[in-house]
Amino acid sequence: MDKEKEPPVVVTEKLSNLDMYGHPTGIRSIALSSDDTLACTVSKSVAKVWNVANRTCLRSLPITASSNSSLNTSSDNNGNSPSYYGLCVTFLPGNTHVVMGTREGHVLVLDVASGDIVYTEEAAHDGAVWSIDLRRPNPQQEAMALMTGSADKTVKFWDLEESNGHPMLVHSRTLQMTDDVVCARYSHSTDPTKRMIFVSSLDSTVKVFFDDTLKFFLSLYGHKLPALAVDSSDDDTILASAGADKTIKIWGLDFGDTHRTLYGHADSITDLKFVKKTHYFFTTSKDGTVRYWDGDRFEQILLLTGHSAEVNCLAISRNGAFVLSGGMDRQVRVWERTRDMVFLEEEKERELETMFDKIDGNRGDEGGTAAILQRRARHDGEADDDDMDEDSGGAAGDQKPQSAAAVRKSVLSVSSGDRIMEGLELADQETKSIATFRRNQQGKADKTEKKRSPNPLMLGMEPPPYVLWVLRSVKSAELEQSLLGVHLFDQNTSTSGMCQYVSIPCIAKMKRHEDTSFTCPTDTQRYAIIANRSLATPLRELRRLLKIRLAEVRDTVGFNLAALRAIAKISNDRKGSYHIPDGDTKDVWAGLGLGSDVAAALESKSNKRSGQ
Image (spheres, rainbow, N blue to C red):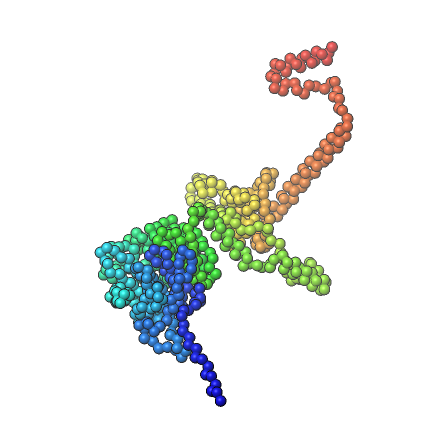
């Protein structure tokens, strides 16, 4: 018997890996090379190097304790090396290596070309390494230095040295803090005696130290929650900090004073970077937006939307030509600068319109026209079944959909509403001042009457005419929507108070037969007016005068219609006939534009002819 042939032995060898093009998890940090050609992004267990020009991924760098790493760790049951969570990254000079801080407290040096971890500082910190920054080189100091901030309440400084052709880190100094370090940054000065260090800690303060001696310089207070990002301008005149309290604070580095607090983000601000050689800066936030700010005028320039989740990090090119942003949506977005003009007023108006649209969309009380009609039909069916009378006061009558104004909020309506509110407050203050002046005059012994000087802010008018003037200054198209913005339940500036001011001059104008404009209130405003008993008397007087004026206008319109019908009838009768004037008719053109002497001569001549 022939022996059965043994199956051939197949030997496999791994030649290369096919990795995902993008990140499998959210991006935590992003860094640009010194020539702006490469970008490195970090997420859980992987870092990726990108070509900025053609937007392609050049290499994936696994953050694992591989066999060629100096990190002595054991493998799991499947033989896989444990992975680490990268939190921050920066390029080293030469753009051949990157330094990364991990959540486990390690500091790794990775070779971009090979993708290997060439040096590991095991347990560099006892907590997560949240921040890493490279000291800017200068001619006096050839040695490069690195700074890391960690949750173990320390800021450590590292010198870069070369070993076996690869850089390595040597611990040089340690700065002990009183709380966890959230962010640590170098200033941009190249003078060692003027270079500063900015450290943001978990106690919501930003502390400033000198780099050469680590001597304390300033402590900046003002944030209600920790500042997650800190950066200074190139000239080191201002410092900007952004935190979890959704605010941006701009500080002066001379005395540590607060220049301005900026608002705009709807959630925690995660990163902040200045544009080189300017006072403009970008911010990212968990609200999914990237915003562009002016640090001198304290204004927002642009709002960049596109991310579908919170944005964690950003990087800016040397000349500010483009900005990279990465977030939890696993996307790296490139924002390029264009030559288009940006008008701040248009940007503000666009942002307000977007905010109003979002508010109107979230309101959704009626649910659209189709939902209103369905509820109306269902209510009508229930009313027919129950045979309910409309005047019975049942609750079903309140469920009918109410009509709403066919208007939408705009910048003009909001500003007009604010102007009405300011006018009401000013009128209320003036009314109290007049009452106080009259009481003081009554309490004096001498009966000499003194006139009170008019208020220049009210243009010399009394409170009722002034409020009516403010209302008339609002465009009729914006008046109804502006009145909707007036707070109804404020004791001093309510709709009822406004009616008290307006009713007096309206009644006077109607009595003098002058033109008076009215606007019909909404249901909510009508209920507030009816509930106020002090308006009963002026409302009755307004109703009486309004009926009289309406009757007069109706009579005038009827008289004009009758006259127009008579003229039309006469015109139709004389269409087909030729009218010959009588001979006794007087010359109607006499004396028109000819002067008194000529008119008299013509009149005497016509009289002589008639006598003959």
